[in-house]
Length: 446
Image (cartoon, rainbow, N blue to C red):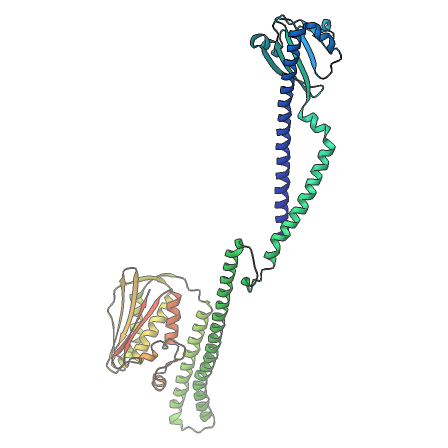
C-alpha cells in the first residue's frame, strides 16, 4: 500500500509541476511575442515621424542601425532603402502581406518562419504621406529554438523537480500510512486516526464485537454439543447394556443347564425378543448418525403421502388390533417432493408411537392434505398425552416421559428424534399439541 501511495503522489506532483512549467513557459512566450509587436510598432511610428520631418535622407544615417531591420518601399514594391542589404539586389515586395495591408489600411503586420534558421520574423509596415511604405522587422526565436538554447538549465530544473517530488511523495506517503499501520485492530478506538478513517474504525469495531459474540455462541454451542454427546454416549451405553445383560443372563442359565426342557422355548424367546430390541436400537442409532452427518443420499422424487400412510396402516394393523386400537386414514392424495425411505420412517414412527402410548380400544387418525402452498401430515391419537413441561423435549434422543411405561412398550427413545431429523431433511416444521389423558396430535408441515 505504501509503495502504491508513493507512486500516486509522485506521479501527481511531477505531473502538476510539468503542467505548470509548460503553462508558464507558453504564457511568457506569448507575452514576449506581444511585446515584440509593441516595440516594432513604436519603432515604426518613431522612424515614420522622423522621415516625415527630415525626409528620406534621414535613413542614410541608419546604415549602422542594427537593432531592427528597416526597409523603405515605393508604392510599386521596389525597395528604395534597406539598412542590412543592397536595395538593387532585393526582389520586388509588392506581394508581401504587410506591404499590401499598409497600402490599403495605413498599417500592416505579418510573421514568416524560417525553417533553416528555426526563427520567425515579425514585420510591421506604415504608409508614409508620400505613398512610400516604411517596414520595420525583427527576428524572434521559436519555442523549439528557445528550448534548445535552455536545454541544460531545463534538464537541471526537471531533475530537481523529480528529486523534490520523490522526497515529497515519500514524506507524505509515510505521514499518511503511519496512522493506518498503527491502528490496533483489536482495539481500534485506542489510537487517534484521520476523520476519514472513522467509518473503517467503526466497521472494524462492530466486526470485532460480532466475532466475539459469535465466539461466545460457538463456545456455548460446542459445550452444549459436547454435553449432548456425553449424554448420548451414556444413554447408548445404558440402552445397549440392558438387552445385552438380559441376553447374557438368559444364555448363561441355558449354558449351565438350569432350565427345564419345557422352559427352554420361553428362555429362547426372551433371547430373541431382546436381540430384536437390540437390532432395532442399533438400526435407529445408525439412522440418526447418517442424518447427523448428512450422509443420506436418497433421491428426491414426487411422493404421495397418502400412499405411504395407507401402507404403514397395513403394516401396523395387527399390532393395533391386539389392543383394540383402530387405525384410520382420512386424508386425500397429497404429493410432495421427498425421500420415500425417510418419509416412511417418519410416518411409521409417528403411528407406532400413537399406538404404543394409546389407551386400549383407543383410535389413531392419520391425514394428509393440501393447504395453499403447504402440505400437512397429521397423526392424532386418544392416548395418555404428554405433560406441558415435556413437549419440547420429546424429540430429544432417548428422552422418555414415563420410563417405566416405555420399557413395557419396548421403545428405544429414538423414534421422535428420527422424525425430527427427517422433517429437517425435507425443510418441514413440526407442531405438537397434547393434553394429559385426552391425546396427542403431531403435525408435519411441508
